[in-house]
Length: 124
Image 1 (cartoon, rainbow, N blue to C red):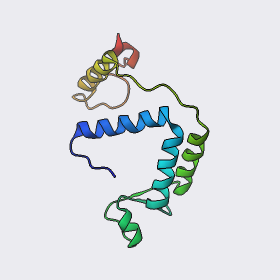
Image 2: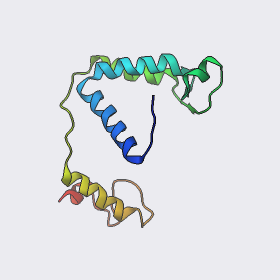
Image 3: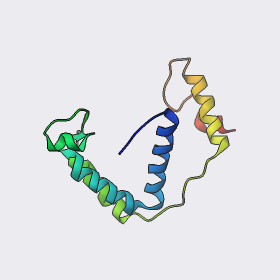
C-alpha cells in the first residue's frame, strides 16, 4: 500500500493517517483489521502480503505484543468518538523547526532544547 517517494510524501501520508484516525476512527479500525488479517502472523508484520502467503517476508517488523497490539487499538478505535480534523499551525511548525536546529547540532534528542527549555518556550 505504501509507496514512499520522498520525505514530504511520508509526512503527508503520516498526517493523513493521523487525521483519518481523528475524524473517522471506525474507518481506521477497519483498515487496521484488514491490515492485521493480511500481514500479521504471530509476532511478525510482513510488508509484502504475498510474502505471508509464501511463508517468507522481504521486510518484516517483529512486534513485542503481536496481534494483541493490533486488536487492542482496533477495539479502542471502534468505540472512539470522532474529533475535529487537524489544522496546520505556522507558529507550532516554526517552533518545531527551531527546536530541530537547536538540538540537532548539539547531539540532543527529545522535547527539551539545549538550554532545557520546553516546547512552550519555543512557541513564544
